[in-house]
Amino acid sequence: MPRFVDIAVGTKFIHNGQEHTKIADERINCCKVNNAVLSNNPGQKVMIVPVTEVEVVQE
Image (cartoon, rainbow, N blue to C red; front, side):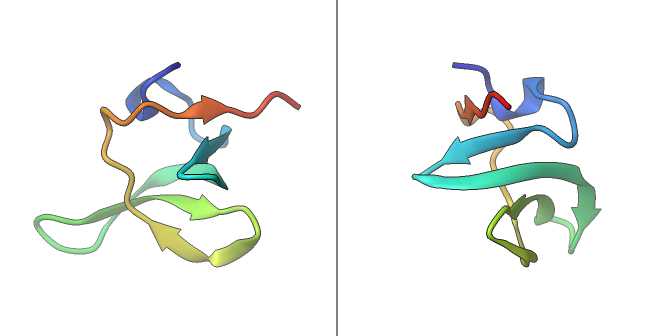
C-alpha cells in the first residue's frame, strides 16, 4: 500500500475504514496540519501522518 505522502492531492483513499480525499496542507499551528477531508462530510478536515499507509480508491 502507498504511504499518504506519496499520493497526489485530490486522491481518494481509505484510512481507518473511512473514505477521505487528500487536500493541500492547511497549517493550523506549529504542530498540526490538516491534509485530508472526509468524503462523506467535506466540512471535517483531519490530519493524516505522512508515513501512514493508505488504501487508494480506484474510480
